[in-house]
Image (tube, rainbow, N blue to C red; front, side, top):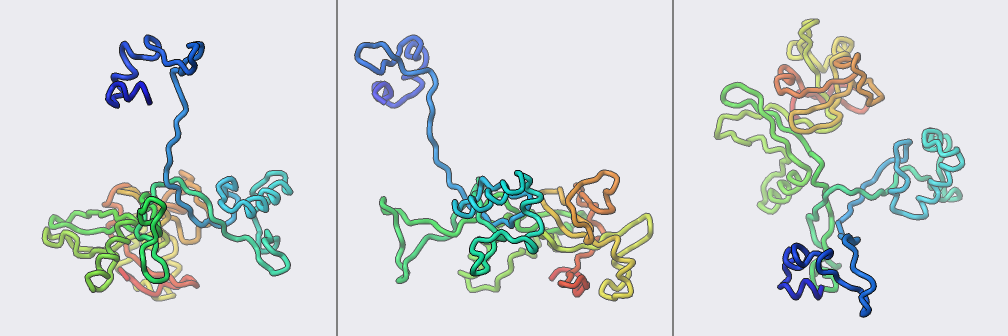
Length: 301
């Protein structure tokens, strides 16, 4: 700090050229027997978010925030020889107890998450007054992850081509906040996006929503049959897929009966789909499926 101050806070002048540590050493004692090393450890702080995650074989126990729960999970893992698949499967038959006497089992845990987050509110006390830290700054609260996408909106432009608009979770939250502050009806999806340029909204895609795809090989076209008629379910089933994950022009779908997330090359378009060109969505119909697997709505809802 002294060296840096001598050169007006300019690190380039203070620590390079003729003032590099090799040519102009910095000593740590009066006898000049020990020098500041050429590399040092530095500390930086980042905001770390947390997410809730179910206890399953893929859980990283080291990221569990609650120390007591982490120790219980580590003990369970140790009891099964470190085999997470055996330790954290079939939890209904063999629960992990937080308090066995009260019947409290561990099913979901809070883990640390290093993705970039941003607060959308500040803390207030019971009287609505701002809660500030020791420096007088408002204490942020209610964080959202910036990396997560809320939905992808699909449009058709004036030339008849499909276009997408990827909306992050943060953007969706901000839109809802703005609409509420203006006293307008809350619609997370902006269906009027670029309507002045001739864009027409077709449908949105969110994780776990369902779509029926056409099949040119068999001649199946979901627009030509009644998708809500149970008599057609056997015909529809091979073409009904669930959205697994989304990013810009890269959409993953899983067959509605598929229970794994393995991308087996030979089973592409049978148990899973990956669409990287918007033309792959042509003729696709969005449907809503209830809790017993019945198609109860067709189109955007």
